[in-house]
Image 1: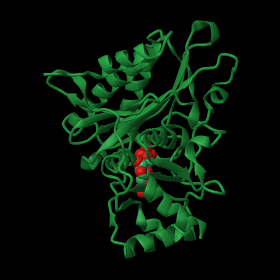
Image 2: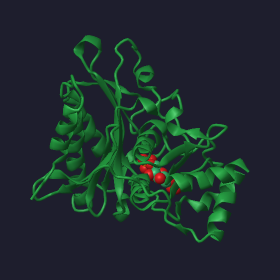
Image 3: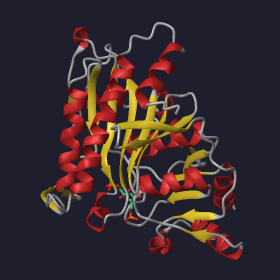
Image 4: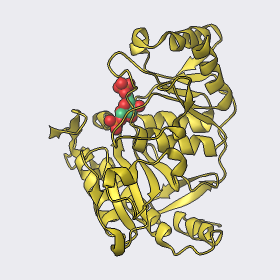
Length: 327
Ligand code: FBP
């Protein structure tokens, strides 16, 4: 039986990069270790009684779930043990954390959303971890300045979906690979390499409850989709909605709304990593927070927790949305 583990797959990838030192592989092994620990916590959450509010709120003023804090601690610990990580930033922390400075090494930085969609935990709906790996530039001293690189600068990006199975989807800029956690051997096993998103898919994914506060173009698109036999799927957990879109085709949208005129989802650790995955899989990832609509990965960030609107998925379906935005 031919089993390719995440570790061996990454090591093989390293052979393709002359001069690679293994630092990068070490970081990905930290993220996969953290993912296994978080998966176990999510699965046992109701039994171990770690569901519900933590009692505090995060920098976004959102109620923090107990598991948000647990997942954040697990990732911080696993990444903190890796000498090649200089700076980390999390959705749950107001400020980035500098782990190592200049001469202490640290070639890379990691930004992440430890538990995306955590408001769905209580009802056992799929949640996920999203991460983005960037290079550290020791000539830049400020942690925020170091991290504020466009999505095009991402060295790798991915997510872990804690759903009916635990799925790890990764890109290092050479296509998209999918792994599933085989708990009998405790390893993420390669199940699909060079994954391509279908070019079309008659499914849109958006919270239509906010429809009346969307810009006109999005409302025109939804009317057109209704008249053209589209179906709607919305879980309310970005990782789960994007994963379905990646495998089945369609489009995932989070437009500007009255409540979030610049969009709700966070650029650095939600939109950028998902955009890299989608583009590497042959899809598209755009934002309507710029005029004209542009690629999410071309946005120059100015803040760690900045938000953006999101239109991503199958190339033809993203084009169908933008056609209506331009009218
Ligand atoms: P967090 O849970 O990490 O804050 O993520 C935000 C999120 O839950 C996404 O996963 C999801 O796509 C979106 O917000 C749902 O928003 P809404 O409830 O407004 O539709």
